Amino acid sequence: MAIAQRVSADLEEAADLAAHVDTLDWPQITGELDAQGCAVLKGLLAPEECRDIAALYPDDANFRSRIVMSRHGFGRGEYKYFSYPLPDLIAQLRPALYAHLHGIANRWNEAMGIDIRYPAAHSAFLKRCHDAGQSRPTPLLLQYEAGDYNCLHQDLYGEHVFPIQVAILLSEAGRDFTGGEFVLTEQRPRMQSRAEVVPLLQGDAVAFAVHHRPVQGTRRTYRVNLRHGVSRIRSGQRHTLGVIFHDAK
Image 1 (spheres, helix red, strand yellow):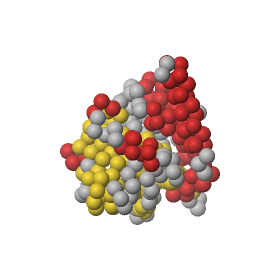
Image 2: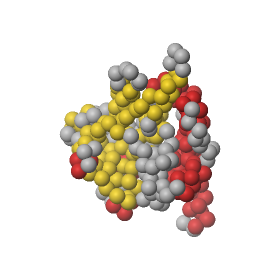
Image 3: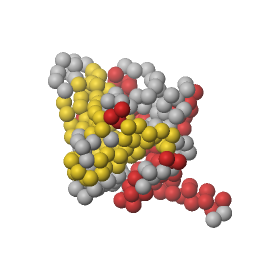
Image 4: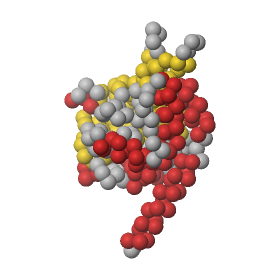
């Protein structure tokens, strides 16, 4: 295929993915993010797209680093950070999702009294990260085996943090693995923590707050702190794609 044909095909594929993201029920997603700090994006990826991404895991040429969770007290299992240039589908997903999430992020910051605002284009936000020395890509591919789990945590990576991220289940629950539920906890001031378990089908994604989000109280809006993780895998193997919108130092 000639270079011009490849470029045309890549642009068409990117437009198709962006158009698919646009068809998601964003009013409902926005409402759930506001109410719960997380929302399911149903059918974000097709099963074959999920399998194609999961199949990248054994080839280290796709990645900049590998993390074995038990060595760092993160849990059990492992994950790899993609290197630039990102695989096409992931490179297209980041700006397509960001285009719908940046307005929510700006509204949350305004409600919490945080001065930071996010530009409309993901490329402009990445430039902000890179200018501050956060130039390493953060999308990651996670792999869990039976007995593995991911401790509750936050993916911050530096000064510049986009307050929402997305995790996509690439494996089929009940066939490829059992257990391994996505878990989100929320700590409100002077209250006990609240847990949210999010069931996902293959190709579904969960968008969720990275660090904190605003909650309207009886007298004022206050911040609540969130952490996320994955419960123990009972059997099989589970792959997940993590789409983080800020880069790392």
